[in-house]
Amino acid sequence: MRYFNGFSLSGEETLFDRYIIDDSDFTVVGFSYGAQEAFEYLYRNRTDRIERLILLSPAYFQDEKRSFIRTQLRYFDQDRDSYIEQFLKSVSYPSCIDISSYLNIGSRDQLESLLRYRWESSRVKELLDRGVDIEVYIGGRDKIVDSSKAFEFFSSLTTTYLIKDSGHILSN
Image 1 (cartoon, rainbow, N blue to C red):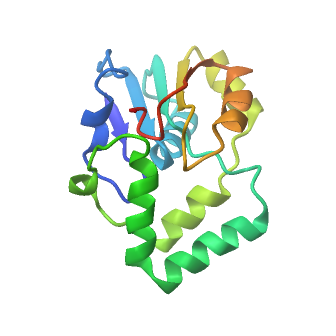
Image 2 (image 1 turned 90 degrees about the vertical axis):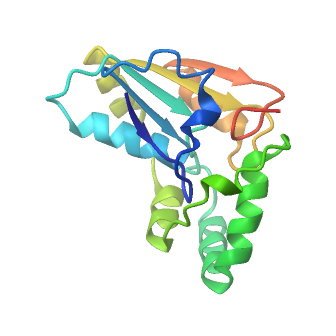
């Protein structure tokens, strides 16, 4: 299995053991920002045989206003430590799980890439047509992304699970 980490995180895949049942060489998994990276890796890579793509709480900001993105970047630039502290709280909400041990502070460029990324239904369909099974897991109480908008987009294309009482790390 190939795993892609969330923004400012490293090693957090252990948090998702219940969702990553098949960890074969033919599976690619990504969490949040890592879901974007996993998708891009698979979309561009036509040589590896991949059967399954698992997107855990994919970062989905394409319905946000430009002012939201500018504000997030400005807060990061002004006080990165405070931004990351609040980010970790939002990622773990509503659980009491301390994820600080997974902290690996990301760059402004990564944050900007995460916020400006556009999921395109035609590209998702293309992966499906190539024979890749795509599963998406979204927390209903996510404080990072608008889970209803993400669910609306992904459920029209893929097998998508909305875990109602869970947050971004799919725990409650």
